[in-house]
Each structure stands twice: as C-alpha cells, then as structure tokens.
Image (tube, rainbow, N blue to C red; front, top):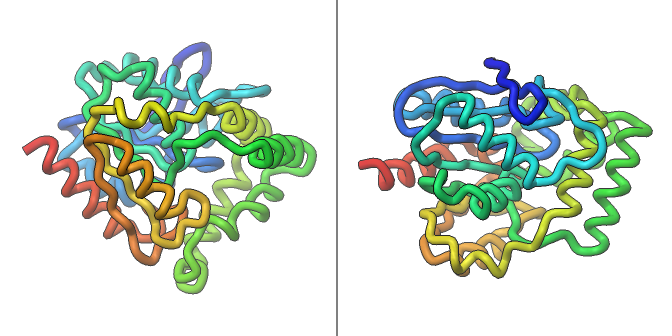
Length: 266
C-alpha cells in the first residue's frame, strides 16, 4: 500500500490499474480489504483506489470525533495527492455511503457517478445516537473485540452465517485489529451525520444503489425509497447477502458494478 499525507495525517491506500478512476470507500469498522473481490475484478480496466480511512487499517488515528465531512475532505485531498484530475466513480458501503453524501455535496465537480452499497440517507434517531455514543465508550474501555462481538450478528444474511464462517472470521479479525480510538471517533462522527433525504431529488449524478436482500440495517425497502427519490438512480438487490453484500455475494455485486460502469464509459 502507498502511504500518502493528507490534512496532517498519513493514509494507507491501494492504487492499482489504469483507466477511469473508481474510489472504493469501506464501511465501519473495517478497512480497504473488504473490497478485495472488487479490486481484483476491476483493476484490469479501471484505476482502482481503496484507502484505509482515518482511524482504520494502516492509516493514522485521530482521537475524539471524526465526522463524515472530515472523511470526505480527506478523500478529496487524497485524490489531489494521487494526481487524480478527472471525475471519479465513488463506491461506498454503509459508512462509506454516508461519506459519499458529504463528498457529493461538497465536491460535486469531482464525481462522475455514485455506487452506494447498503447505506442510508436518514440521520440517526435519538436512540441510534445514544447507541453510537455507548459503543464509542465501550470500545475505549473494553477494546475492539467487544465491538466485533456486538456487531457481527447483524451484518450477514442467514445463508452467509451458515455457509461462510471463514468470511465472518476474517471480518472479526479486521475489527479486532482496528484501533479502539479510531472506532470511537468514527462512531461519534456517524452519530452527528446529517439527514440528506431532502437533498436526494437534486442529485443528478448517475447512481447505482446495491442492497443485500437480507440487510437488516439498511433494508431493501429503505434503499428502494432512496432510489425513488433520486432522478438518475437504479437499484440492484443482491440475493444471499445482508449488510456486507460485496463480501457475501461478490459475483452478483461485481456484475452489477460492471454493467453500471460499462454504461458510463462505453
């Protein structure tokens, strides 16, 4: 991985291939590694860029609160440092989608298209904010393994839980290896994220939405609503997948991304 200094911190980033740039932004509390099946698939035809966000993977950690806007600013600065001049396809999962909304609002000229996987447009409810604050406190006091234990049961479809234990184990290892301070800062940042629902009808950017049919966090119904509100969006529902659809059913997710990118760049 390359190490790139942006906004006073060092980010680790995979930067491979040539062609139109596609930026892959991981979910919480993971790393760029969640995109491995997509990076290997698309590096032959595209420039694939997959950072570890501030606080995650091999990137520097910032204590306190790291907002979704801060992550978006980091990514814009990263693109500058990597000399990416043309508009990008921004592909984000879950928290990566929250960051995508902020990137779209702040840097619309830098976007060619959006791919939003298993994410939400609404802000947290008061109960959701409280849960994120409690998680931030818990991880600092008890370590990252406690977060893995709390989160993993909700991330996967029943089929994945039954058939892909090795995948679940790998994700557990990723979470356990993540800085507690990084997890806490991002959790508090997500609690502060704004509701972007009212902005959706004004987003003209071509958008592909992807959701696992068994996602219990960002449900099919919710993502159908996001799709209907956006004027240039379409939704692909992924079978045998929950909240981690690019990991659970990479073949179907890759096919959806491939078809979308082909439509953009033919």
